[in-house]
Length: 464
Image 1 (cartoon, rainbow, N blue to C red):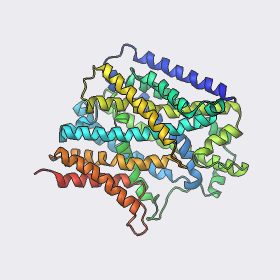
Image 2 (cartoon, one colour; image 1 turned 120 degrees about the horizontal axis):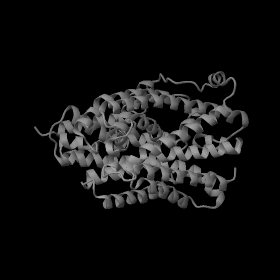
Image 3 (cartoon, rainbow, N blue to C red; image 1 turned 135 degrees about the vertical axis):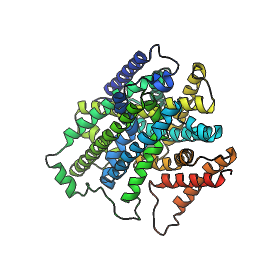
Image 4 (tube, one colour; image 1 turned 90 degrees about the horizontal axis):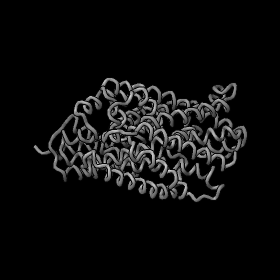
């Protein structure tokens, strides 16, 4: 299919999202931007959060990783389920009991204003880096497939994507995202189903097994992918990147009743297991197809190359719209959550101050554009593992802060809080890159190590 037709389809899809967002957020109150008026239906929230949790990185990177890693990502996914259970029955009751708009209000209630500001600052750093890395990957693919053949520079394409996201989130916020994310998740899953069905050979499971792609468990304790490490990492990645993340929790906070919010998270956990398994199966049949047809592309380039060079034009259109659908939930949610946390936690603005909120929203859009252009210099075969690695450094202090606040709250000075939360990731970097472990390699358990070091430092720094 011609790049011009594909571009027309993408722009029409953006207009559909804009119309939907404006329709659901019309005449919304001041709290609609932050918590959706606390009136969102929990099944809709759960389905929409699938797209937010997975993003364009999962859409591209997880299928591309199967050739090298098999189905070992399922180890991490099993840990995700344990993490969602912990969020539903440990964190959510605290958030609902306090009636928070920003989850970092819990840190203020337990440890004081400095802890709230520090937690929000780490969230802003974490989500900005993670969201722009995800955004870069999908904009890069869209540029290669559509914009470059039309002579559109990468920077212009990235700017247009961010402008469209800005238009449908600047006023609607969470109220709009609950419904636009649902549409986007549906688009992403449609693309997944269509591509898997077309590529699925009659004896797929036997071929995958013969090729050694169905391996899930890793028994070598020294490996980065050792099963025990992956399960623990998956659980704590979910707790940190969902339960301690304003972007992810703002949708659960928009559900009025605690019990319904808990159902939302448990349903989300089940949906994620099924969807990630489907993406891994897609990655397996993509690998088989590449081997059978001499496709040289690997990693993140595999899925787009097979679709755009070997499948019919209508499938290419479905793929591109599914890719856009996978991109948007993480980018639009991040913009909204970063705006909310900056306004409520760092600037301490009243929710009614819409003018400043819009300026902050625009400022983050400009920052996103600058970082996406910076990520263009990063060359990685699989961005999913780059993002999870970065999360180990930036979400670790949040994990330690919340653990200390919930289970061992003691007074800690603002200076000590800052010193500990800077020292812990710095020490992790020394241990990670120095590798003083006699052959042991730190993998995704870096997040847990970082959190433990943060908690230990806060315990030692507490005032008696």
